Length: 38
Figure (cartoon, helix red, strand yellow):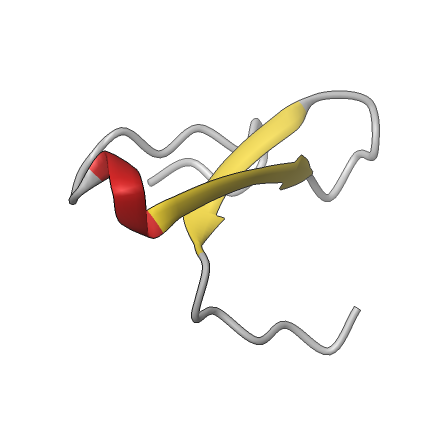
């Protein structure tokens, strides 16, 4: 998992969603159940 670039390529594809990464200019794949403060 590279949080800087927002790259994550493991787990069930159906359990992941795409959203902005910490830089806000790329996409990150994260668990749908993940609850980040921001």
